[in-house]
Image (cartoon, rainbow, N blue to C red; front, side):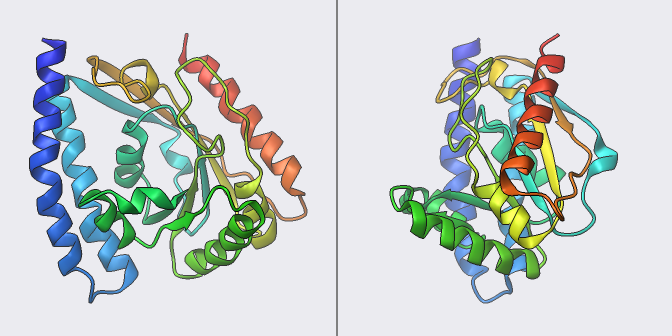
Length: 235
Protein backbone atom coordinates (compact mmCIF):
# COMPACT_ATOMS: atom_id res chain seq x y z
CA UNK A 1 0.00 0.00 0.00
CA UNK A 2 2.89 2.36 0.74
CA UNK A 3 4.26 1.93 -2.78
CA UNK A 4 0.82 2.21 -4.36
CA UNK A 5 -0.08 5.36 -2.42
CA UNK A 6 3.26 6.97 -3.25
CA UNK A 7 2.83 6.09 -6.93
CA UNK A 8 -0.66 7.60 -7.04
CA UNK A 9 0.63 10.81 -5.47
CA UNK A 10 3.47 10.99 -8.00
CA UNK A 11 1.07 10.48 -10.92
CA UNK A 12 -1.22 13.22 -9.62
CA UNK A 13 1.79 15.55 -9.35
CA UNK A 14 2.73 14.75 -12.95
CA UNK A 15 -0.80 15.55 -14.11
CA UNK A 16 -1.41 18.66 -12.01
CA UNK A 17 1.97 20.40 -12.27
CA UNK A 18 1.87 21.20 -16.03
CA UNK A 19 -1.62 22.65 -15.61
CA UNK A 20 -0.41 25.00 -12.88
CA UNK A 21 2.69 25.84 -14.91
CA UNK A 22 0.46 27.13 -17.68
CA UNK A 23 -1.54 29.10 -15.11
CA UNK A 24 1.73 30.50 -13.83
CA UNK A 25 2.73 31.67 -17.30
CA UNK A 26 -0.65 33.39 -17.69
CA UNK A 27 0.00 35.25 -14.42
CA UNK A 28 3.06 36.99 -15.89
CA UNK A 29 1.33 40.41 -16.43
CA UNK A 30 0.44 40.69 -12.73
CA UNK A 31 2.61 42.16 -9.98
CA UNK A 32 4.96 39.92 -7.99
CA UNK A 33 2.70 39.40 -4.97
CA UNK A 34 -0.32 38.54 -7.12
CA UNK A 35 1.74 36.08 -9.15
CA UNK A 36 2.92 34.43 -5.95
CA UNK A 37 -0.60 34.07 -4.59
CA UNK A 38 -1.75 32.41 -7.82
CA UNK A 39 1.22 30.08 -8.21
CA UNK A 40 1.29 29.04 -4.53
CA UNK A 41 -2.18 27.52 -5.00
CA UNK A 42 -0.30 24.50 -6.39
CA UNK A 43 1.34 23.81 -3.02
CA UNK A 44 -1.92 24.45 -1.16
CA UNK A 45 -3.60 21.83 -3.39
CA UNK A 46 -0.82 19.25 -3.08
CA UNK A 47 -0.96 19.20 0.75
CA UNK A 48 -4.55 17.90 1.03
CA UNK A 49 -3.83 15.43 -1.78
CA UNK A 50 -0.81 14.25 0.23
CA UNK A 51 -3.05 13.85 3.28
CA UNK A 52 -5.78 11.91 1.46
CA UNK A 53 -3.55 9.73 -0.73
CA UNK A 54 -0.52 9.13 1.52
CA UNK A 55 -1.97 9.75 4.96
CA UNK A 56 0.53 12.48 5.84
CA UNK A 57 -1.00 15.06 8.17
CA UNK A 58 0.60 18.03 9.90
CA UNK A 59 0.27 20.27 12.91
CA UNK A 60 1.88 23.62 13.70
CA UNK A 61 3.36 24.69 17.03
CA UNK A 62 4.11 28.35 17.69
CA UNK A 63 1.51 29.68 15.28
CA UNK A 64 1.51 32.89 17.35
CA UNK A 65 5.04 33.52 16.05
CA UNK A 66 3.95 33.85 12.43
CA UNK A 67 5.31 37.14 11.09
CA UNK A 68 3.03 40.07 10.33
CA UNK A 69 5.70 41.92 8.33
CA UNK A 70 8.52 40.88 5.98
CA UNK A 71 11.24 38.90 7.71
CA UNK A 72 13.75 36.14 7.08
CA UNK A 73 12.56 32.58 7.65
CA UNK A 74 15.36 30.10 8.35
CA UNK A 75 14.01 26.57 8.11
CA UNK A 76 15.32 23.05 8.60
CA UNK A 77 15.50 21.24 5.24
CA UNK A 78 14.80 17.49 5.36
CA UNK A 79 12.17 16.84 2.73
CA UNK A 80 10.13 18.21 -0.13
CA UNK A 81 7.25 18.55 2.34
CA UNK A 82 8.38 21.86 3.87
CA UNK A 83 8.56 23.49 0.42
CA UNK A 84 4.81 22.90 0.23
CA UNK A 85 3.92 23.62 3.85
CA UNK A 86 5.79 26.93 4.09
CA UNK A 87 3.63 28.30 1.27
CA UNK A 88 0.45 27.37 3.12
CA UNK A 89 1.50 28.44 6.61
CA UNK A 90 3.60 31.58 6.08
CA UNK A 91 2.82 34.90 4.36
CA UNK A 92 4.01 35.55 0.76
CA UNK A 93 7.61 34.48 0.43
CA UNK A 94 10.53 34.06 -1.92
CA UNK A 95 13.17 31.37 -1.60
CA UNK A 96 16.91 31.37 -1.88
CA UNK A 97 17.63 28.42 -4.16
CA UNK A 98 20.06 27.02 -6.69
CA UNK A 99 19.39 28.43 -10.14
CA UNK A 100 19.38 24.96 -11.75
CA UNK A 101 15.90 24.39 -10.30
CA UNK A 102 14.55 26.98 -12.72
CA UNK A 103 15.57 24.77 -15.64
CA UNK A 104 13.14 21.97 -14.71
CA UNK A 105 10.30 21.88 -17.27
CA UNK A 106 6.96 23.21 -15.99
CA UNK A 107 7.94 23.24 -12.29
CA UNK A 108 10.95 25.48 -12.86
CA UNK A 109 9.02 27.83 -15.15
CA UNK A 110 6.41 28.44 -12.47
CA UNK A 111 9.10 28.75 -9.81
CA UNK A 112 10.86 31.46 -11.83
CA UNK A 113 7.70 33.59 -11.75
CA UNK A 114 7.61 33.59 -7.93
CA UNK A 115 10.62 35.98 -7.86
CA UNK A 116 13.13 33.59 -6.22
CA UNK A 117 16.71 34.52 -5.41
CA UNK A 118 18.28 31.96 -7.73
CA UNK A 119 22.00 31.78 -7.04
CA UNK A 120 24.92 30.02 -8.69
CA UNK A 121 26.36 28.02 -5.82
CA UNK A 122 29.84 27.78 -7.29
CA UNK A 123 30.11 31.59 -7.41
CA UNK A 124 30.67 32.16 -3.69
CA UNK A 125 31.22 35.92 -3.52
CA UNK A 126 28.90 36.66 -6.42
CA UNK A 127 26.15 34.54 -4.89
CA UNK A 128 26.51 36.38 -1.59
CA UNK A 129 26.31 39.78 -3.27
CA UNK A 130 23.21 38.63 -5.14
CA UNK A 131 21.61 37.34 -1.95
CA UNK A 132 22.18 40.61 -0.09
CA UNK A 133 21.03 42.82 -2.97
CA UNK A 134 17.98 40.84 -4.07
CA UNK A 135 17.09 39.85 -0.51
CA UNK A 136 16.72 43.48 0.51
CA UNK A 137 14.71 44.17 -2.65
CA UNK A 138 12.31 41.32 -1.93
CA UNK A 139 11.85 42.40 1.68
CA UNK A 140 11.03 45.93 0.45
CA UNK A 141 8.50 44.42 -1.98
CA UNK A 142 6.61 42.81 0.92
CA UNK A 143 7.99 39.26 0.83
CA UNK A 144 9.49 37.13 3.52
CA UNK A 145 12.78 35.57 2.42
CA UNK A 146 13.02 31.82 3.06
CA UNK A 147 16.50 30.41 3.58
CA UNK A 148 17.42 26.78 4.15
CA UNK A 149 20.65 27.44 6.05
CA UNK A 150 22.05 23.95 5.55
CA UNK A 151 21.84 24.58 1.80
CA UNK A 152 20.45 21.16 0.92
CA UNK A 153 18.15 18.50 2.31
CA UNK A 154 19.69 16.71 5.28
CA UNK A 155 18.44 13.23 6.30
CA UNK A 156 16.24 13.05 9.36
CA UNK A 157 18.30 12.87 12.54
CA UNK A 158 21.37 14.52 11.02
CA UNK A 159 22.72 18.06 11.07
CA UNK A 160 24.32 19.89 8.16
CA UNK A 161 26.65 22.87 8.33
CA UNK A 162 24.68 26.08 8.76
CA UNK A 163 25.83 28.50 6.09
CA UNK A 164 26.14 32.21 6.86
CA UNK A 165 24.19 33.76 3.95
CA UNK A 166 20.78 34.10 5.59
CA UNK A 167 22.32 35.51 8.76
CA UNK A 168 24.32 38.03 6.74
CA UNK A 169 21.14 39.20 5.02
CA UNK A 170 19.49 39.53 8.45
CA UNK A 171 22.41 41.49 9.89
CA UNK A 172 22.53 43.74 6.82
CA UNK A 173 18.79 44.41 6.63
CA UNK A 174 18.01 44.44 10.37
CA UNK A 175 14.79 42.45 9.99
CA UNK A 176 13.88 39.66 12.42
CA UNK A 177 14.63 36.00 11.76
CA UNK A 178 11.98 33.33 12.34
CA UNK A 179 13.56 29.90 12.99
CA UNK A 180 11.55 26.86 11.89
CA UNK A 181 12.03 23.22 12.87
CA UNK A 182 10.07 20.15 11.76
CA UNK A 183 10.33 16.37 11.50
CA UNK A 184 9.08 15.84 7.93
CA UNK A 185 12.08 13.70 7.02
CA UNK A 186 10.79 11.00 9.33
CA UNK A 187 7.87 10.34 6.95
CA UNK A 188 9.07 11.70 3.60
CA UNK A 189 12.81 11.29 3.38
CA UNK A 190 15.37 13.07 1.29
CA UNK A 191 14.88 12.06 -2.37
CA UNK A 192 12.64 9.22 -1.17
CA UNK A 193 9.86 7.79 -3.30
CA UNK A 194 7.99 6.24 -0.37
CA UNK A 195 5.84 8.50 1.80
CA UNK A 196 4.89 6.99 5.15
CA UNK A 197 1.58 7.92 6.77
CA UNK A 198 1.70 9.85 10.02
CA UNK A 199 1.81 13.29 11.62
CA UNK A 200 4.45 15.91 10.84
CA UNK A 201 5.00 18.67 13.38
CA UNK A 202 6.31 22.07 12.30
CA UNK A 203 7.49 24.31 15.14
CA UNK A 204 7.83 28.06 14.61
CA UNK A 205 10.19 29.85 16.96
CA UNK A 206 9.87 33.32 18.43
CA UNK A 207 11.39 36.09 16.26
CA UNK A 208 15.10 36.66 16.74
CA UNK A 209 15.72 40.39 16.65
CA UNK A 210 18.87 41.02 14.65
CA UNK A 211 19.63 44.71 15.10
CA UNK A 212 23.04 45.10 16.69
CA UNK A 213 23.95 41.44 16.16
CA UNK A 214 26.70 40.12 13.92
CA UNK A 215 25.94 37.47 11.32
CA UNK A 216 27.80 34.68 13.09
CA UNK A 217 25.88 35.35 16.31
CA UNK A 218 22.56 35.30 14.45
CA UNK A 219 23.52 32.06 12.75
CA UNK A 220 24.53 30.47 16.05
CA UNK A 221 21.23 31.44 17.69
CA UNK A 222 19.22 30.07 14.77
CA UNK A 223 21.15 26.80 14.71
CA UNK A 224 20.89 26.33 18.46
CA UNK A 225 17.12 26.87 18.48
CA UNK A 226 16.39 24.67 15.45
CA UNK A 227 18.57 21.76 16.48
CA UNK A 228 17.32 21.82 20.07
CA UNK A 229 13.73 21.91 18.86
CA UNK A 230 14.37 19.03 16.47
CA UNK A 231 15.48 16.95 19.47
CA UNK A 232 12.23 17.88 21.27
CA UNK A 233 10.18 16.80 18.24
CA UNK A 234 11.91 13.42 18.13
CA UNK A 235 10.64 12.46 21.60
